[in-house]
Length: 325
Ligand code: ACO
Image (cartoon, rainbow, N blue to C red; front, side, top):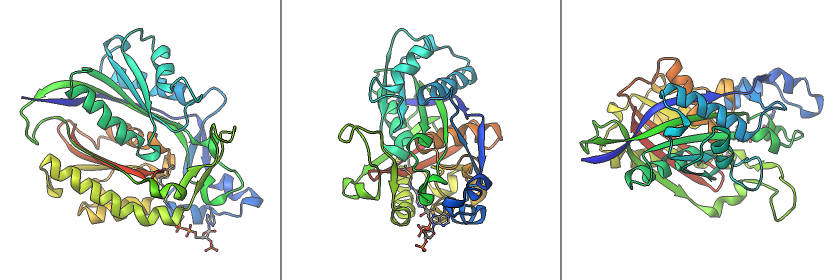
């Protein structure tokens, strides 16, 4: 017998404010076009938080949707693991705010900060909690309010990001220890702090401001396809599965060209890739659970499907998870 962390439910929340590329095009000082944004990134629109939305409120809304999908209540949950780089406050964690918003009075909650790779890191942590017996049912959430760290005069970043949240409910289940089991089959995590200057926020406790996102996009791009394909292959090898067995890739949604390049390197056709970047932009740690929730609603991710999910972000930090839904 092998303990597996099996997906029981999924859900998401998107703020009501939708911003089309045309809105950026209409800002004369920004000097950008719908055509540039679409061709270079694949993004057509994104959602931005409105006054009532914070990272923790969006996370709680996604968590409620995932709990409803799992036919569970907050009382059933032992732990909340929330991936975010845009927590409401420096502390307490956004995860404990979600715990309280859900009315949970037991268990434990903490944030994971690995920027755009955050949800993959959170899944790996939740999996470790489950297989070590620390928790049986874990809410794993990705939630971000990147609109709060955008420099609205920097056209090379402000058109790329969006806000939102997605959540999964994972539950312990005995498996046979083979790749036919449901649940998380393998994980692979990596980081390399030598690349910190490629993608960072220029604020924090050392500056007394929350700061703005700074990115050398073309440099990050160069690392992305190679590192994503490599981590996906490592996780697939650990899971004992090959590309022809994979039903879906659910990639981090940063740029359609990165998504296409990685799928090609993995020998998996684009009609087996869940793509939401056109509608959400890059929502950092929220992008994968958002894509899973939307993909599930579209009928793309079915019970028993073999799924590879991969992400890279600031750090650089990157990783992949192989799971059977
Ligand atoms: N509108 C018009 N022109 C623009 C815009 C814009 N919005 N932004 C940049 N440009 C210009 C640049 O100034 C540059 O002009 P120049 O050639 O005269 O200097 C030109 O377009 C090309 O710029 P590049 O940055 O080389 O364009 P590229 O094809 O690399 O696309 C992009 C840029 C979309 C940012 C791409 O590099 C990318 O997606 N990178 C990876 C992003 C990513 O995955 N990040 C990791 C996750 S995010 C996280 O962890 C928070």
